[in-house]
Amino acid sequence: MRHFWIFVHLLGFTMWMGGGLAAMFIGLGAKREARESLGVIMRQLAIIYRVLVLPGTMATVVSGLVLTLTIYGNPGASLAVSHSLMTMQGFGLIAAVITLVMMVPNVSKLVRIDPVTQAAQFDAIRQKQSRLGMLSGILAMLALIAGALGRP
Image (cartoon, rainbow, N blue to C red; front, side, top):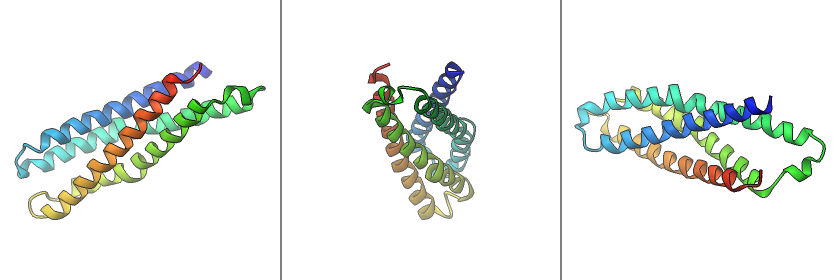
């Protein structure tokens, strides 16, 4: 059963980070587009967040919690817990909270705002989304590095 949860964890993380990278490159490309087309681009970003980022983040968090509980429930649990594992868990949970609580609702707001008639509000939320995405991505990458460099 442990292998199943590791698979779910890796699949979820891949969906989360892949969707985040896709959103980042779409956002960078959107800077060159006309303001009238930004509404369509934001709808496409919302699909990426709804289909890849949200389920990937949820799968990563749930499988990570299950794997953590299986580690702490086994005899000799104190030997299995390392600094790299705790670092991965900490950075991953913070990145997941930022993604689930701030970024997913923000992209839903962007879809409902007209980029032409409500330009100031649209640009402010889009800037916030960009900063949150950068922070969440950095934390997720640090979690990945900590998990990859940790002892098996």
